[in-house]
Image (cartoon, rainbow, N blue to C red):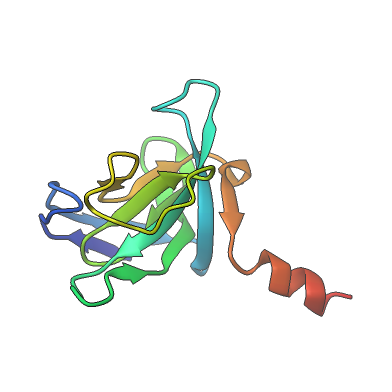
Length: 127
């Protein structure tokens, strides 16, 4: 899999990186990050696209091989990366919000730090 992000207003980082896929991608809604809160805090996550009329797009998590730590979970979004906001913020996605920020992608060590968008549909299907 290849993640390519071009520099933009959401994410200043320009990136081209390749990972070896281990499993299929799944839509992800929330991630727990530790860089802003050492105890770990949950954040909404979306992909950010180059469509100025509708920039919000799905974010995905996928198990990949990481040369430094074995298996990892890469979270990626649109051509303009990912966008995050705290789960307690009830505001629309907006580049002008001081509570939101963008990243090219996120690499996580544990599945416990992900909340998937397809979990509710999987639970309903298994009933």
